[in-house]
Length: 439
Ligand code: ASP
Image (cartoon, rainbow, N blue to C red; front, side, top):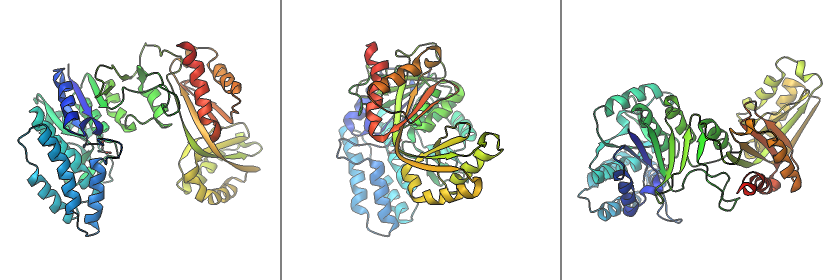
């Protein structure tokens, strides 16, 4: 058995957290490969090292003095090194970083140093080999991540290596220039390493004990999700869940490797398992509820729309031309509705309207604003009669008006559009009927 363990920024924020991480790694000898983020916040008012690096580099790029800011970053690492009683100095590393900042090595290079240095500290602490992902994680010239070559390189590099620490979040172009993933991207690195070594499990250690059935800012202490499939998670992530970087599931999914989300501060909790498929039923028919406020919709009607070839494409073209991404497109026979994020749409709305008129000559076009979308997701829904009825009677009961309903053909999710102001009320009603009544 072999496990890849990834620790996020809050798990590595100070020496005390490093000690917890080492205890976790030592508690299970199958935890061979460790992927680390940069040190995160030690408390609510603190700043993540990654953010400090971006800010410091911004000064360098403007040609301003940045010595004090870089010294503050060095102090954070030194505090960890001292707390762990390591015989390690990062002095030379920081000299190189200062030189490269002056030479304007780029903000990706700057941000990546958080993980790079943390990898050095962690490998020194654990006595594991250090691997710089710039050697193995490859980005193509167009900036896209090259999954296949990376997979081969990581597999080759780790062959015969018993234990290693690998920095998360970045890689490099073929010419060696550093490139990062998007924020939170160490989750992706963990998944890449797990795929390459055919790990039995990818453990992703963070500061929560996995996914919850609903957002704890809306529901008081929601129930945890024990097992969720990759597809269910995609449906929920898409609507705003944020424990794991959404791209992190793709590498392990290719190999059918499960991800286990764990809590560094509560290692006794079993966390959430993210799997390809499972015979385990979710406890409450639904697996999770997620949603997002702040949508607009554009309603379009045209007689005989359903028989006009290319009509939908022409409507969508108007949005594409304005570079607006589309969230959802429910349709009727002679009507269709396009949901878009309000803040993205609002400045371009008239341009879209005139283009729709030019391209598709609708009979009627109407814009509505301040809507929210709620996704109720669950692999168990298709086996259960009356799920939709339960959702809608719960909503009717609390006087929430459903503005839109869409059940995906996979029967994995039901998406409901409500007014922004009804958003929390609707989520509470759905949670109550599926979860609270079953407790
Ligand atoms: N340190 C990076 C960030 O703050 C990447 C990560 O933590 O995964 O986004």
